[in-house]
Amino acid sequence: MTEWVLSVEGTDTGRDIAIGLVLISAFLHAIFGALQKGRYDPVTMRGAVDFFFVCLALPVALIFLPWPEPELWPVLAGVFLVHSLYKILQARAYELGAFTVVYPVVRGTGPLLTVLVAGVLFAEVYSPRQWLGVLVLSLSILALAWVNVRDVTLARSTLLAALSYAVATGAMVAAYTVYDAWGIRIAENPAVFLAWFFVVDGLLFPVLAWRRRQLQLSPPDLLPLLCRGLFGAVIAMASFAAVMLATRIGKVGMAAALRETSVVFGALIGWWLLGERVGPVRGALICLVAVGAVLVI
Image 1 (tube, rainbow, N blue to C red):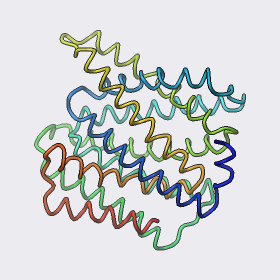
Image 2 (cartoon, rainbow, N blue to C red):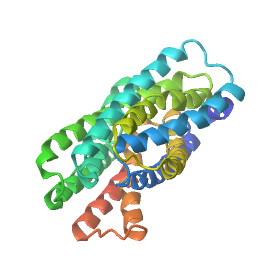
Image 3 (tube, rainbow, N blue to C red):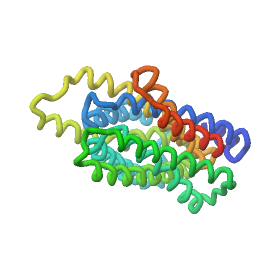
C-alpha cells in the first residue's frame, strides 16, 4: 500500500482517486447514520460498534502488519483522546436533541472549520470557486438544521443545549479530520496507522456502554445489539478508511467538504428505504449541498 500511495499522492490521478474515495465514504457514512436512528441510546450503540472495531482490527494489526514505528504511538494516543471527546460530545448532543436537528449542525460546522485549519497547517490553497462551494455546502446543511428546528416537536426544552453540543461536536469533527490526516501522512505504512487507529478508537465506549447496561432496569437484548454493532462497525471502518486515505493522497479540506454529501445520500436513503418525507424546502437545500460539492471539486 505504501508504494501505491507514494506513487499517486499529489498527482491528478491521486486527486481523482481521492474524490472517489470520499464519495464512497459519504455514502457509507449515510448508511451508518441511518443505522444509529432510534433503536438504542447513543452510548450503547456506539459501544457495540467500537467493540467490533477492536475485534476486527486487532488481529489484523498483530498478525498481518508490521509493528508501528515508535514515533507513531504518541500519535495514536492523540487519536484516542480526540475521538473519545468527539464521541462523548456527539452522544450527549443526540441524547438532548432530535437526530434531524443535531446531525446537520454537526456536519455543517465541520467542513468549514476543517478547510480553514487545513489551509494553515497543510498550506492548502483553494480557488474562489472552491471557497464558494464550501460556503454553499456548509450553509445549506446548517439551513437544513434550521428547517428541522422549526418543525421538530421532541426535546424542545433541551434544544439549546443540544445545539451547543452539536456545534462543539462539529468543531471536534474538524479537529479529528485534520489530526487523522496528519497522522496518516507521517505514518510510514498507512495500513499500520489505519489498523491501530481502529484499535485505539474502539477502547473507551464498550466500557461506557457496559457500565450503562449495568444500571439499566431493562437492558436491550445482546444478540440484536451485537449484530447491529457488527454491521455498523464494518460500514464505519470502510467509511473512515476511505476518507483517511483520501486525505493522504488529496487535499484535507476538499475531503472534509465532499464527505458532507452524506447528507444528500442520507436524504435519499431516508426517502427510499425509510419512507421519510423530504418536502420542497428540504429538497432544495439538499440540492444546494450537491451544488456546493460540485463547486468544491
